[in-house]
Length: 212
Image (cartoon, rainbow, N blue to C red):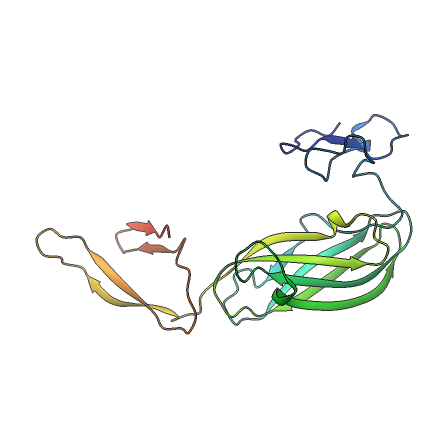
């Protein structure tokens, strides 16, 4: 079997008529496994899938209003050729964990036949107008796809504020009566800026991370 499973994910045989060696076992693609059903890792006739961990983007630390290129790989994991129709990306703008059609940010037609085991490199472009951590979902569309649970992926893409979006507006470095030092920051942009995770530091190496 294959060691190192995440909690709730069983080991499944890839080829049920194959051997018992580790090469014929994979972690289930479904939480709690597939008892009584076809193994989720066994190939089916038509199966377009996103290659695990193939999502990347450039620049690595994008700023708001900057064009981002999102790259990924699509693979025909099925036994027969599959017709790759399109790839779409959604941003969870209202943070409700539901990626609706109104939140579509990219839609690219592919219209290409992929042979079994063939991999296609894909890229999408997006220019977010807000900084912060954006939850995105990328979805592949293929005709006659028999296993749709592996054709989408959700990931977080952090977007930085632009230079001078947030500035120091007032500083109290010498408080009276043993009061606390403090500073005031000003958002000069026309968009809300999420400061969670920002680091404040001074020349003496004292630092503080903004929790919320």
